Amino acid sequence: MKPIRKAIFPVAGLGTRFLPATKAMPKEMLTVVDRPLIQHVVDEAREAGIEHFIFVTGRGKGAIEDHFDVHFELDATLTDRNKQAELEQLSRDLPGAGQTSFTRQQLPLGLGHAVWCARDIVGDEPFALLLPDVLVQHTPGCLAQMMQVYREQGSDANMIAVEEVPPERVHMYGVVGVGAAVGKAFKITQMVEKPKREAAPSNLSITGRYILQPEIFAILENQPRGAGGEIQLTDGMVRLAQMQPFLGFKFAGQSFDCGSKIGFLAANVSYALAREELAPEFRAELKRILKDL
Ligand code: G1P
Image (cartoon, rainbow, N blue to C red):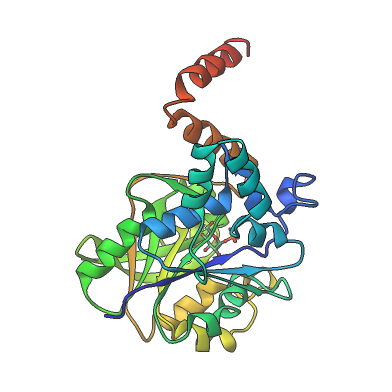
């Protein structure tokens, strides 16, 4: 089995659901408490052992590149002011020199196209894919859990994190069909992107964390447009599943769909309550607000 060293982060999306916040700022830089969404997801990948971080960006996303760079003037000012804790935090959050790559998805042609844009940087090895819209709150993180199960099953399989969603929400996600158990995972029998409730093979949705084999790139290269006129990753995975094993994994943890306002707000509440130094005061504040409603 080849090790999984690289992860792709598709960050080219316009973030229209968060306008005007995202007019001049990438949606991936919106903060959950005091860390940008993209930092939370990079943290999850680093914890899982990922060594190279590939960002598929687009116009107006320069802040992401700056965020994962050393900020010399800031470091100098913090040093002058003896702000040791802040300096250490900044340094901890930063991937090492040469561990990041940025490429652009020139046109908004969908998730499958975004992944394909990273093909040369990934090369001929399996990789992780993390969608920064989705946060999973758990220790160990979702990708670390997947890596463990991936290693245990022992083959060059593909693996998707899945979770149960209410039937009235299946049309918002990719949905999988469930086959036989393989250790802590299960064989995926079907994948459908944004199915109607009646056509969904189950209520297990694809949660934005994937381990994929590099053969996906050749498939995406010739992938016709699917749902919404976009090159859909799910359609590419359906074709890959005809050639290679595909496993689903029900992770432990609470997911937040931060692509929606409610999910994003709920993530802020939940992550703040998980912070020791914030929780007591924040809980009191929440109680006060709720009491007045
Ligand atoms: C994408 C995927 C979908 C997955 C979802 C998770 O859809 O295509 O299969 O369930 O992310 O958030 P999007 O949210 O980009 O429309």
